Length: 572
Image 1: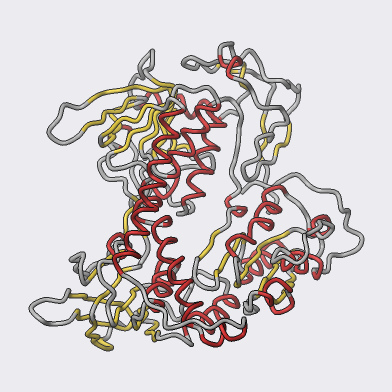
Image 2 (image 1 turned 180 degrees about the horizontal axis):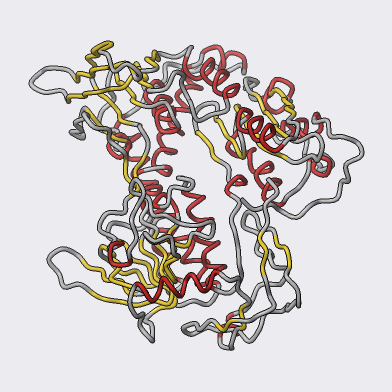
């Protein structure tokens, strides 16, 4: 966990900027300094935010020797323009591009964002936003359908029902509202929204346009690729958008099948199983690995399976591939051929009403013009370093070009894309910044929810063996929390993985009521480098669910001789 970045400030290099330059940094040490970066800390270099007026003076930016590497790459890729239309162009107006654009405006950059579809990208239009609308409905339905739960609260409710079109409209209306909010925020701040598909022509040069119309060419001092991802469909699967669907289609909720197979038991598959079973469907999971929910901490996964899968109308096949899926046609059902994941022998054939392909997502990087700058993707992902700088086929950094979000594959989460975009803007405005991805939380919005940040227990123990340190685990139950019991939602567990010798938090995993909201205390602690011996003195309102985390940190046993001084955050 202890990684650092050494920055030499003995020699200054003048970095030209379009419309914004600095005189000097507020510090100029004569010897190399050791810096540690983490999360979204704005004061990573120890100086305050700079106003727009600073961008009109000259900057002496002290840079490490990597600048030679960038210059070499620039020579190989042709000559850049000498003046620019924009300080920053962002290709892709999803959550990542939007976050980068807003931060760029705050930093005084003239910014444009290119979008070939609609503002908001996958998350807002076909992902996390409309899916939360459907999950809100499934949560209400579960409460109303649980006679035991209602009776325990002293409530009597008649049979609950739903209007499918009304539920679908709720999801669509939410997506439209958030999309309009994002669009209006960009316009209000003066960000130019350039409509069309963006293609990189060369260093600092992009064209954009729509089919059948002339292309437009624009230039920028810096360019960020933020094109996101699309659903991944395995070979042998025929998607018709009606009976064999991806998450894009499922969010429209055009029908609720009696029996649906969900291929993949990760975040997407789990959330849709929650929706479909609440609305009356029977669900069958098809998972290639030997256990369900393979990406989760194993202990949390077992508990989640006991609560989210076993009591519901869900069965599953593990260790198998769906080698061929054929849509329903001419009165015949959807057919799914299953083979053993290891031996590839035929195992079974399922005939169902529908199949949802939830096997992950693939980067949307085709047509970006990466060949014009000697960049070769890796399984579709744009190769980048820890600062999101694009790496070309020769291993050199492409000057002034960055890639964030799903397109680089580092962490395929909307909020991770936004954080990466903000980090990039910090860099191009003169402040070095490295994002600690281990501090970025993730959540699955089932009922109850699952959330996590940092390492799983097996990952932490492997790291401990490699680096020769001990790993300890602490746990608390929601059954001991007053607020959870008041809600009659005592099913849940919080788990802390840490180093007892230093108090360093390695990972936190939560399964229970509002777990997605509770995780941020832990993620912020990791981002800020806060140790357990310090955070256990934090005060939490009573009675609240946050006391689950309070008890979790207090139950950890840290060696007494360890200093309680807060260390600087750690970069990875």
